[in-house]
Amino acid sequence: MLMKQGLKGFSLTAALCCWFILQWTTPLQLHAAEPRSHLQRAAVFLLAADYRQAVEACQAEVREFPSARSYTFLTYVYHALDGYVEQLARTDQWVRVEQVYVNLAAARIEDLLDPPDVLARIAKEVIQQAVQRQADVSAAMADRLDHALVTQLWREQAAWRQARPDDWWASAPPQWQWERP
Figure 1 (tube, one colour):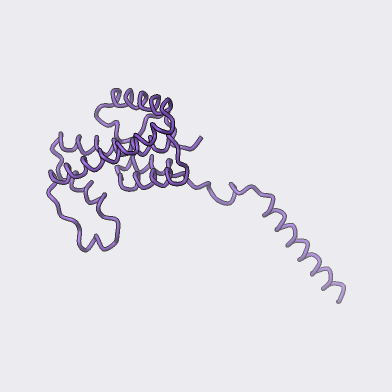
Figure 2: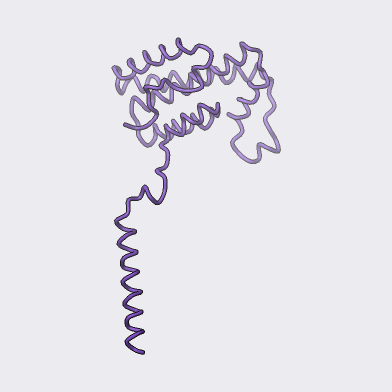
């Protein structure tokens, strides 16, 4: 009887040791998908026209991994927001302009009870002026860090805009690969 209990204890201990060894040696990718980078999330937010989240994701990238590339991507999101609002105004989609304003202004649950009301044409001007100022600031920072890289990225961006004049703001040039190298 004592022998059986000893073997059970030994078997349980051996099984537990094997389990710990497997847990320790098994790659982490098997347990959970690798979380998306800030820039990968920003690219998804850009596709969804969730510019507040896209800006916040790029700002997080700038804070954690400051570089000419991260500042340029932030600038691009500002430009994309400006282009999207301009397209909505040009096509007389003022309700959507208001929706963009609410997306940018509403960040708390309380905003559901007291949403910001604003005339769409005023919202367009407010958004575009603020975005243009912020884009100028982040573009200047990127240029100070790596002028050659920024020049290359803006050439690619200009070609992207020219190739897709009606929806360039919905995503970034494909060669930008919104992941950290």
